[in-house]
Length: 355
Length: 178
Image (tube, rainbow over all chains, first blue to last red; front, side):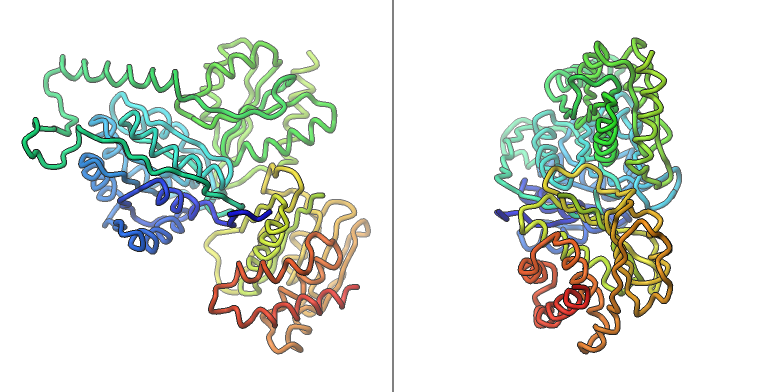
């Protein structure tokens, strides 16, 4: 049955999902490999009577988002790696002022201008703060075009729920590839925002601010933020697994890497190697508990990333020295083939599982 | 059932469109599908390719290291992708533009003069659909009847008058390789 399925590239799927989730305003500056997203929204947002604005730069775009979020709008921006770096000051302000917004990063190879091919080398930047100060984004990592839809919708809800910026972290492959998607019943349920600067009209003054010159007040604000991040860690961890229950070698991978890992694991299973997959869907909060639990039974871990090794640090923290944690990755826009990952799994299984 | 297909040729030969029509047809038939294009600072006349996976079960990697079929519309594509084919896989060659024989003995080679047939039909631009017809004839990956629906989805409305020509090209590709 075809149902309501359509074939869409990931970038467009995010745009359409944002519209259905009630995104009222979108501000961005184009960059490969995510330009299909602003391209789609340039057409679709006016059709829906909403605002598409191409800002003069990434810095302008994120600061317009800051203003719009402060005024209580459902707002989104998107870019790719170098453009996301430019936005970091604004993101820090938004996190400090506790405003909800959605930021999409369709990652390309770095550092610097890097290249335009897919990468996952912005993991540190996305999950450890990115800009200055002690703050965290909620980071969602889709692994299919359908998840780009589902997690974009979720991103808006989580942003409002926690008054926190949420990042959807994809990569060039997911942005450019087509898969069938359904939009189902995405609800645009925007909660009331009594804190927003919507015109005073007799109520007490609302202030949107990230400046606290009194260190006592700033420390208090920081502990308040940290308490919120702990609540998020307690309630919002999401992950998926494949052949995990009896796995001796656990591959930890997110996004497109997880898709490649899944095929490599099927190849390994056909060879009698007990490999399994743990796929973080939220990168912050990280599924530390699930990995710790897997470490009870598994002999070893392999972090598979399109980077030189970033998430592997969080996997090691979760495993806490109880098992060896290996890393395999390609960088610069190179995607490992399932065969290549299978070879790595086979090698590690020989070294670690046999012990 | 799983088909992992790489379609490759010059930019402008309709390689990405061929892949999209195939992916759409698979989706219409209720299969799991993925379509992954090569993207980059491409130039006119450069090479383009896409990977299409059709499967009865959830698709892991949309990136394919050992395709079950390669559709090569020009020589550089054949030279690049023939070595990747899995043993027993199919290589569909556009002999109008490829005057070289395939090298491997452990694959099935299907030769079709796609560009010549397309020119006979009145437009060299449907060579991609001739090749698609040959692919479907050989693999039965999707039904021929589904391809019309797929073309309607993939081609913009203003191009729908070209659907009969595209279907003719598909049919000729199939007949040629029966």
